[in-house]
Length: 81
Image (tube, rainbow, N blue to C red; front, side):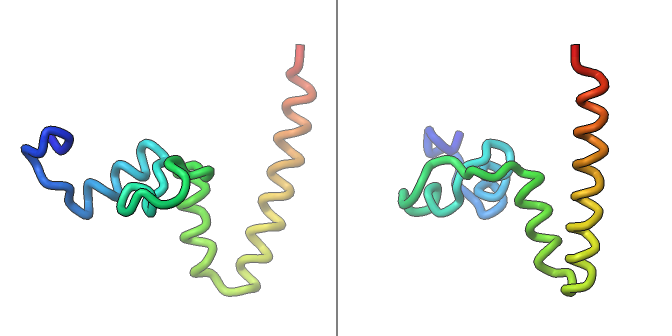
């Protein structure tokens, strides 16, 4: 409907398009930059939350993420064929 100009492009539409299809919001609005965002929805979500945390909590999150990565790597190496 938006493409056929039967419906207007709202702020909510823009956010949804960017989130679902990993479209770069700047590109969608202005045509500048890359069409697709290199970050996934979850990466953007994590960055958004992470930026709001204090430094001590950010350090804790990084430490936890590193431990989870080690667990994942160990799990993957056990379950490889």
